[in-house]
Image 1: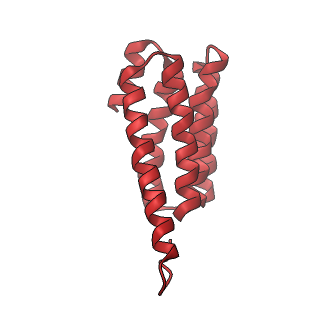
Image 2 (image 1 turned 120 degrees about the vertical axis):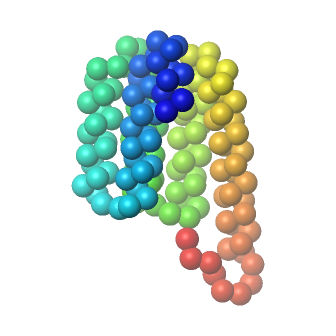
Length: 134
């Protein structure tokens, strides 16, 4: 919610809307991987985007959120993490373009943590013995 409030205070409603839906997405994806839920959230993001996007760069967080919805509901393991890393890159781009220093720091840290996790998952998979699931 702090991220959404940050963008509201900056007057940038597109990332505020996207980050608000991301909160809902994260909570719902913990309980279900339903395609109905994924499509419903995607529709919500697109509708909010129609009301909040004021420039082409305003589409960046909308696109990132739609891709992340797909990742959260349909992928797991390394493919999921790579998808989320790509979305983090989109968010970082958005934050650079709108001069959000806090957002740049946050997304850089998320990218570092995600990269570390991807590296660990790949290394664990390369070890001899039973292959870890997911």
